[in-house]
Length: 178
Image (tube, rainbow, N blue to C red; front, side, top):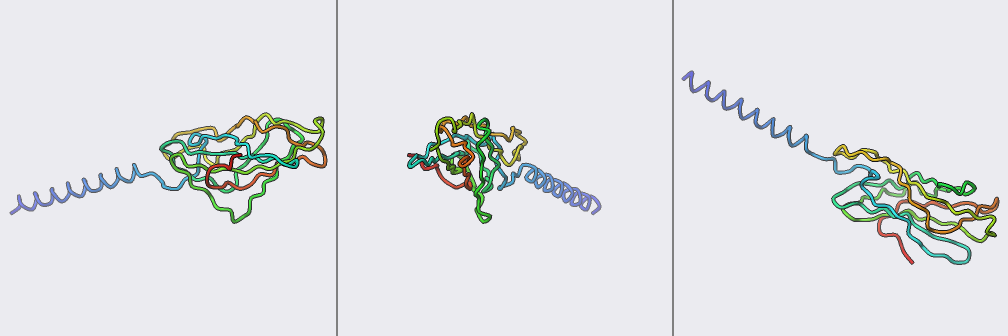
């Protein structure tokens, strides 16, 4: 009878240990399902949006790399490189939603500016920088949060009266192209 009790107790302990090991392994390998994007998870480019009556439109487009899933908040820090007299004006409504990206899906930030001044009162940015909201993925992959996109959208007014690029909210989908 003692042997039977010892055998049952040993099996119970072995079963509990195996169960806890499996649970711990499953927990250790689980990935969060909702985390913000790193620059390394995205491909980013500028998209020409058209021109008319002195107005210019463009978009910063983000596309999730294959196998990547992440979320972009509605508002991202944006800066210009060069064009020191041009300001950026964030126009993101407080209720604008975050955008979930996954495996090749896209989102964009709309840009609007004018280009009606004389050439001496215009500047051409070298690049537009966006700061990704996260530096490290849940897998531990790290990337510089700064995304520098060469500016390819022409001149921007840089006079005292007109010198601003309006920056909108991150919006789901491909950037509207002309």
